[in-house]
Length: 92
Picture 1 (cartoon, rainbow, N blue to C red):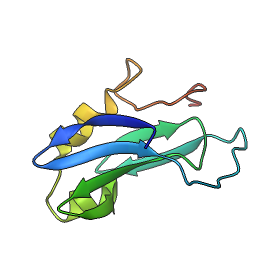
Picture 2 (cartoon, one colour):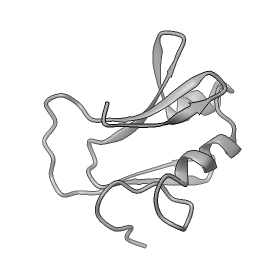
Picture 3 (cartoon, helix red, strand yellow):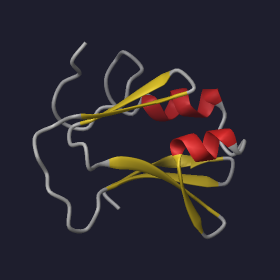
Picture 4 (cartoon, rainbow, N blue to C red):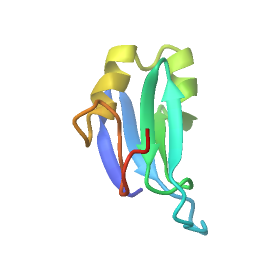
């Protein structure tokens, strides 16, 4: 785990990176329910831990674990545009 983003409806949201990832300076992007998340490295991602299992943001949203409001709160982690950033800049 790199960073704890908060707990929402019993779900722990955290930023993680694979143990043996190659960190090329290529930003990653994810859109869930119309909310954009940008990552400084494509291998970084946000994961949701609920009742002993990991889920992607999309899976957690589709299963009703997270609401769009939760996603918006998570995305406000950094940056003033409502997008989640980790390192680098957003390219629009």
